Image (tube, rainbow, N blue to C red):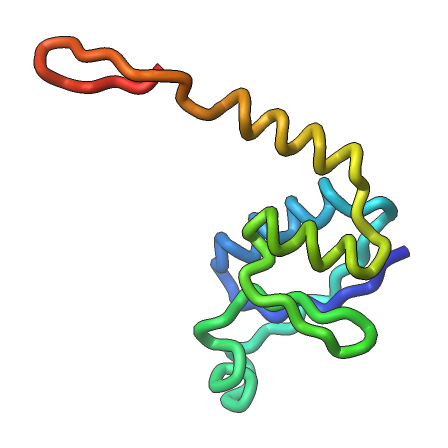
Length: 111
């Protein structure tokens, strides 16, 4: 089991995105220890504009882990990346990308 700390705060939608992405890309179960930064002025000063921040057991931090490329690289460095899940996730993103555009009534639409 992968054990990570997540510096977060109430209502952080990027934190929710990160949690879902970690669960989808990790090659084993992930346990997240949520650390609420708003309860501590020092944590707010350190992490306030950086959350969500993931921290591994060695204290290595990852800012902006909700960006798939950054999280994938961070997980890969630790041997925790499910390469098949990443390939499927990437293929899904590619299929959702616009394939072209057309105009109608002076407006441009992506297809």
